[in-house]
Length: 180
Image (tube, rainbow, N blue to C red; front, top):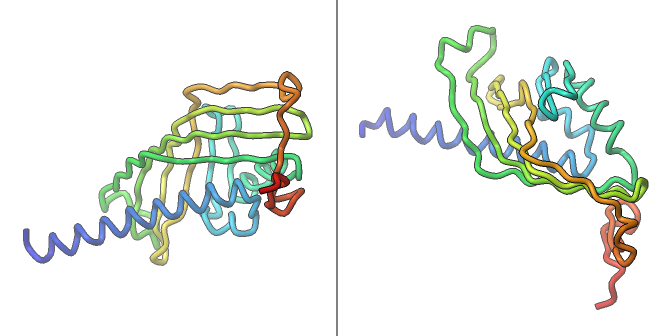
């Protein structure tokens, strides 16, 4: 392997790691309801197509407003775990827009659980995210995100009378009510 190809390989690996960190930050912002920080993961003109396009929005602000509308309540608790990233870089000729230093796509498996104490339900499922990324000013950002469900289920918490939420970032400050 020549020095140039070694340097290119290292740059590719660094870009993959930055894209992974971007996706992980997106998921953390969703689960922690960090809406201002969420602005740092999207380009302003970002698009989304959640749930096989059932929920599609154009523009970073519209995407974040939709997420806030459904999730920004003390009774809404979620965890989203993404795995198995398949990140591919698009050829240089796909960078026609001014200031674009790179483009990539990503496919991610996601497993998620929502506990909604306001509606007394638990929703869980799995899906595959399909993302597009763009690198501008040396920073990777999400240009498009969305997922197609593999499966999803919903259960009433009332059907399990012994189930109790013993810790919540929003109602207990993240501390468990269980005595050690």
